[in-house]
Image 1 (cartoon, rainbow, N blue to C red):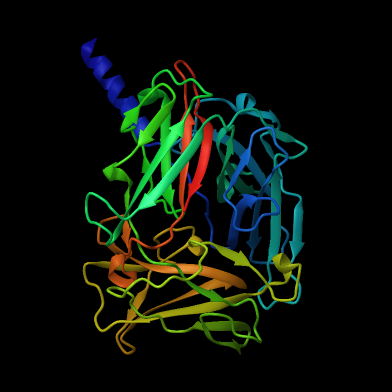
Image 2 (spheres, rainbow, N blue to C red):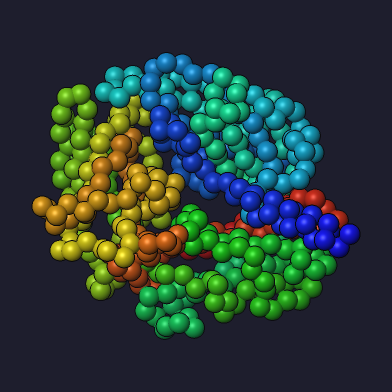
Length: 415
């Protein structure tokens, strides 16, 4: 009996560890510019309030004029973005699946594409509970033909979160790192056991590689939880994001060296970047890694903005042999994959890469990832400075004793 119990426990542990943790991203090459945010608010966090008038808008381009039959399914997720144990009926009022009926073909563009969008909640679906939600988009009503996943959150504000960022850390004082401190005021919401019922997730600039989950408070009272001097909340300061603007093919925006037409497509060459490692801090405005689709003097940029090949380059005498260099930002969903891995050109003594992007304004950085590691460092190419203005988003989840899902009870941005 003991051996049978041990075997069952091992099977359960394997199943739990094998759970997938979801994040927004396309799953096939023909899906581009997948965006998730509050409807009508560009560059917003994908978070809405429960039982409010706000809506989440999911939009993307499929790179053809052939109309596809796209469907969606909506599932509730745990705080760590694994699927929760509650059913669709417990989380959703209405139908958890449906067809995407809002689509428009691009007009007068060199790249043909069809723009699709869907909003939640809608006439067929409303949310009963707060927490994280996963939308899977698939073709021909066949879940095996998934083309994208989109993640957003629904919050029921129950707690107040306040935070500060400082350069004085346990590692260094006012040099390369930032310490995030914050408190959660639950005076209006009873939490009996904060160590088991409260879960906190922190992201810097929407980066998943450096996110922190499973934090425990440094100090706790019945009404306030303090996360202070926590070494897990020490982050690289990094540097302000680089940017470029390719919203016009006639007037070169910031960061653009030239835009030329090589039949049948446009090519935008960025001004060659230089390493900023070791340089003093320079204040400049950025959007903390986000991008916005934009076509100058055109209000219908979702279908009139064209796609173009954007060429990145950063000169360096010798390549990195102990790892790889990547372009980091929302333009690739903050993923380190082959699409944004820089390739070293020995003839030019530079790292180079080309991305297919929709017209607009973009933020990006260069991150170095050591071989066999998953966390990127900005220090080799961007430097790391405590003065850098970064965005930290704090998510507070609650699961009471005997409850089966994580409620999102607070979200706060600290800059």
